[in-house]
Length: 120
Image 1: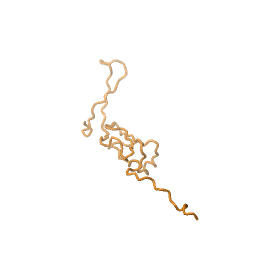
Image 2: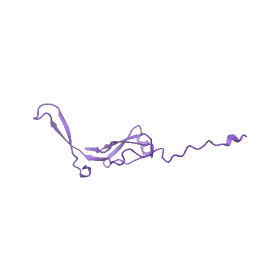
Image 3: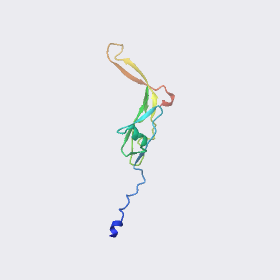
Image 4: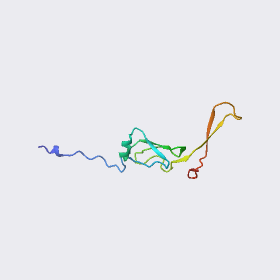
């Protein structure tokens, strides 16, 4: 038996960073769209790979205020984590354009959210 058959390969270089990013929680009244993953995979995964992007989605008549998409960075953090993402009530009002009303398509203009937790 040769001694070289007992020599193990060198360990991979040490990295102080995880190989991806931990799952993060969605905003209240919202969820996260995980592209390319099944419901079963989403339930079992705890770390997402570097460069993976998630997208926040809101329920009902709510819209995202703040970053809508976050990306996993090589240092194990998500982009824009210093800025919160919130699902805020949307007040959309349709006005005909131009004024006065004429039989033309309507345009939708967003108004500031009525929800105090979403006030800027």
